[in-house]
Length: 206
Image 1 (cartoon, rainbow, N blue to C red):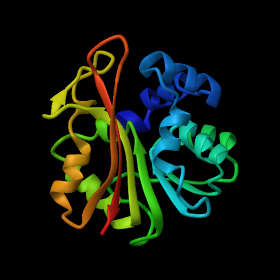
Image 2: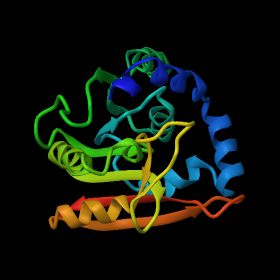
Image 3: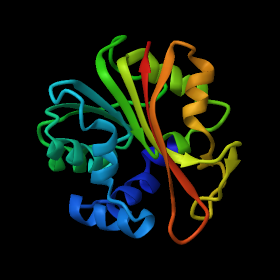
């Protein structure tokens, strides 16, 4: 948390500020499919008035995407102060507050859907259950995720740093911890230029 809240996190924010079109171009280069299309496959039929919370929006890329899909009741919890400023400018209508994944500053079942996009990968395996429990606590119905995938937990060196990134089966982690969750949809997306895989999943409380 110290790393992501500080200068390292601020630099990450400035490096990852995309307009929706350029982000889609990046996803096409990586996967042969746009992020817009991925989101449509999972969220296309959901009520546009539902309350949605993103954990770790960073510069607001996914909030922009959801806004363009017509979702209008958006909130987010972000650790880095600079990222909050950037995201608020990107999506002025969203309620973006400072906080962290281990103590989400909202009551139980506050949001129809809670989601992360490449955020759980930065949570240490020894702490991941705490994070997932907080997400489940504030989610009323849906949990949505897009994360790096491997069948077994694997640490990855991140820009020369250890202890900052892990890949695993995050959907499986949710289902193992919370028997009250069911899988609505999951889909793996392999990178075009190597054997790495990301997974998008949508879970629902029974």
